[in-house]
Length: 334
Image (cartoon, rainbow, N blue to C red; front, side, top):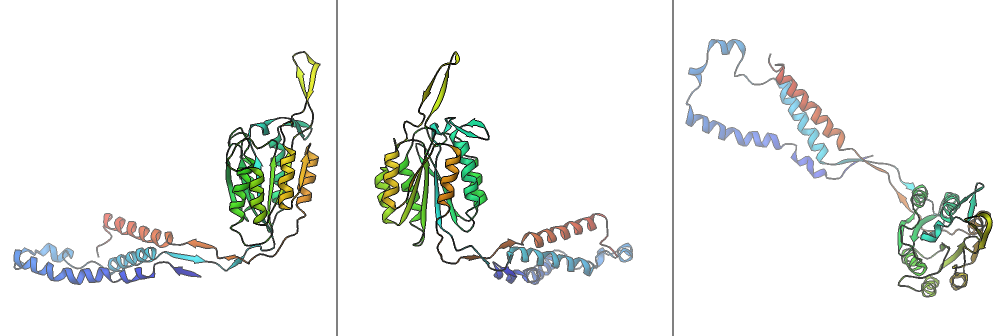
């Protein structure tokens, strides 16, 4: 249906008529003071051509129509659709993804090629997000600082897009796990009591930030938030020497991963810690988390709204231009 945001604007419809009624006495008074009569100025040619006669009725009707369309536009018409019920059988789920500098380490394989950790995470989490139809999903990116990249929303494609566009190191080179958890708690605590989950993925240890990870986990536990932590990164990585394969050495690229802290965070909140040494294991972990039981939440509805004011405004402008063209081409005569 069509609604009017400012219906009082229709009180302006008779405004031109009121202005005309008030202007006529003043116009007559000024004419009487200046020239008592104009009869002496009339000529035969004026009578023949019709000069001095009132303008044609269609012009007056057109001017009134233009004014009515402008008033309609000022009243802000909008189309309001039927109520749409949002999905209600889901979870409030925040994803916290580490994008610190170490996530650029190329120790995981995807499609038979060696790629960095963040590329693999994006591919796996993308499918995980797509499968969350009915859940509110939010996204936190963290490095030296933690940011809410997407608040809790049903708009899963947008969440996916924001994760896909996140580059390595844009949030800083260090890892603020505690701040990421604290930010997630701040967002999730605003939601009604229910199934609230945080899935935190990192490849390092907390080495910066204002909140200690365990303290943040305790706050999450008090708010009924379960945290599932994921440590990502291979256990072995071969570094070639300047002589090629001869003289190469094997290192542990995940030596800085603090598994004890990640385990403690999960245990404090009733969650679980998982270790993903490769792409297949990471896919398996997200499949396990995907089996969390949904709960009923408060039903939410919204009405789609589309503004319509530009239509009467465009109509009024078109008629006004037509009137100008008519005057220019002399169509206003008999």
